[in-house]
Length: 401
Image 1 (cartoon, rainbow, N blue to C red):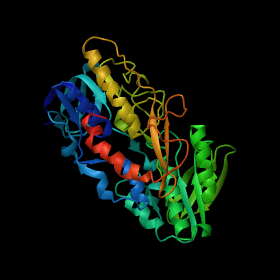
Image 2 (cartoon, rainbow, N blue to C red):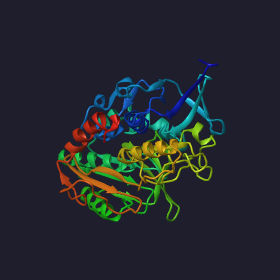
Image 3 (cartoon, one colour):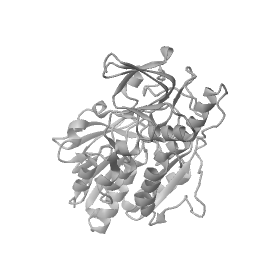
């Protein structure tokens, strides 16, 4: 394969949520020459990992064979992409082969930059820290939460865009509710480190989360980051960027969320936004079309659109990309507009959920009738545990939702 050159009319780079959703929609629209570049054998429903870490779901429920979600009629190129040559409508694979295209959709996901925080990678692979941002580590989070009866628990969130920005808080609330049920919450110091000046970017939801954190007695460090971790001494260094003060916290449990960015090979490509340190594919935030290469589109976590990086955002972006791509193929200008819609089902307890829906205006954007999305609702974790995964596997990945 190293010397081979392939050609497909439409090439989709990435077989995750975004790539499979777009490929399925293109096939349903009648496109017959669609290829997906994806090296993985397994497809993950990552939103479930929060519930896995909180002891509310088994990890096996989040994984299915990649072959089972690949749309019928799509050519699966099972290899790593490692570079783009948009001037020549070509991309290269790690095998050395080239793939030529007429139209390109870039959605390889996001990179977890574990090594950007000194000591973090070693800590999460040690006995006292974990992260729900990894399939391998999410079950460990629950193993650490369940026996803890006293001491200090630290929950972190990095600066910059990350996938599911509510996840760092969700696991803190799930853990605190469990410790409350066990009667030990009062014996624990719970520290939540947020890089933002508020709990959430939309004020109405931020206000609710303020009450949630206060209810559990969580010590919230705003405008702050963990900048160094020592797993052996169980020490985390927190910097408050408001006054540049530093504090060392010794933890008995830490849930760590790594900084994130576009994959390095995307950052180094001509498609990247060179003005951004995160290297995302530079697109128009409404049409999802590349600002310099008119036959290239991007969506999902790797795109530069300034929306919250969630699966719900992908669900709204995928039909826009599919429709606009086909319009360009007909020689027309892109028409459908993505308005920045995103949704974050915030678990505030083991039986309550706050469904935060919003768009580029950073105002509430409710879409489910008869549900008050501005307050916690009882038993909506059933919605997150069963209804959303069912919609994901049976509708979204098949291009029907």
